[in-house]
Image (cartoon, rainbow, N blue to C red; front, side, top):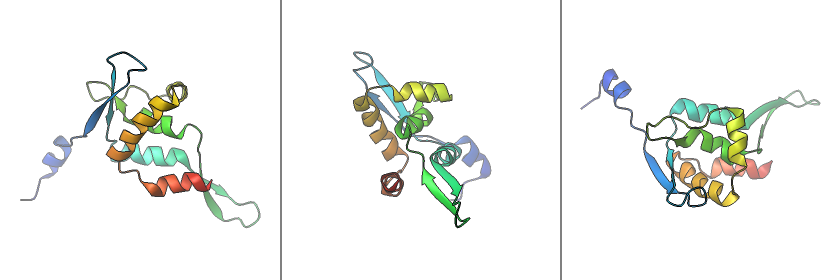
Length: 127
């Protein structure tokens, strides 16, 4: 059975996973959810930077590696209501100040939930 436009718009479920973060609170958990298509596009636009080569005038793409993981987490870390907890540049910098262990644990979940695979990570390694 084909679904209707209304079912598509109203039925959008964004899967999430609660990740233990005892480093932040003894029984604390962080809710990491799947991004919307728009959020993923915005994240990709923020990490892939197009630049013109000064000699050849060709457009080259480079990856902005600064705070890569925190940038992703800001788009995936939500409260019980499903709304993002972090959205400003200051928030992203603050997230980057967390322990690398905490960031890596949550990043692994965000990466899996959002189908971020080796293509993106290979692009980072090349730069």
